[in-house]
Amino acid sequence: MKTFNYFLALLGFLLLVISLSAMINKTKIITPQKVRLSKLVIDSAQLSSYKVLLKEEIEASMGKEPGVLTLYAVFEKGQPTHLTILEIYASEDAYALHVKTPHFLKYKNGTLKMVKKLELIDTEPLIPGLKIK
Image (cartoon, rainbow, N blue to C red; front, side, top):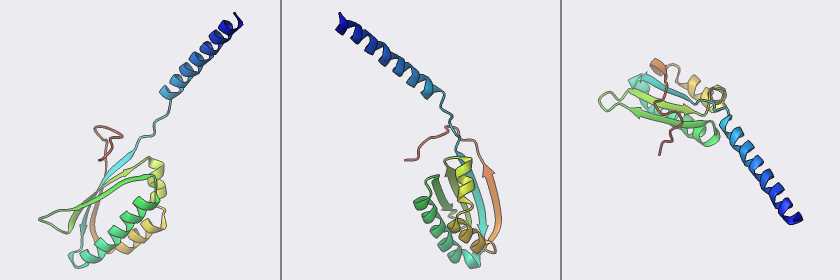
């Protein structure tokens, strides 16, 4: 009888733990990602230099910053000085940290005179948190 009572007490405890765990998982605060499109036009005379600095910045950010999820730069075929960068950060805080890093500041300061036009477009993803394969 003692074994049976012990078993019931243990079973009750396990059910309580499982129930509490489920409740905690439901109440987790999900921090929304920051997703942005950056559209740029680069001075054609400085395009090669710009690409070097951009590549260096993207590689450093992706390699060193866990909060930088995606930095995907594409140049338009018909207008090679026009590019769009898909930027995905884990959160607004991750973005705030990113723009203070030495590698971002080197890129930003090094390309100031190369960028003829910059448009920053904050977005609302259709499927937030979707992973890029």
